[in-house]
Image 1 (tube, helix red, strand yellow):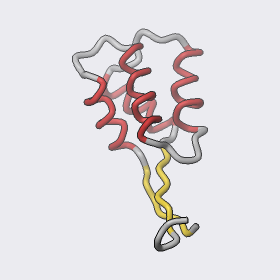
Image 2: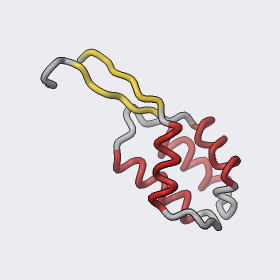
Image 3: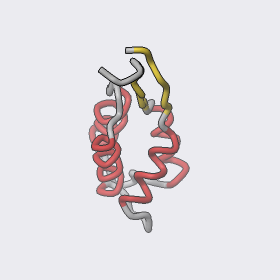
Length: 89
């Protein structure tokens, strides 16, 4: 239970993550199965994206990309597309 009865929820849609990867020219070294895992399993299907989830998403992007971005920079970009809202608990 939180002090005031509210919880922060963070979500990332597959479409917004896909758009980010296209914009940044990321995930060019992954196959369809790996890309689907990123978009659906690591992002879209999560009820609440945690910091650990952001790290996992960024690392997966980094591992499947030829990029000058480091993992921390990818994490920052992924955080920018997350939708965050508050819900009463």
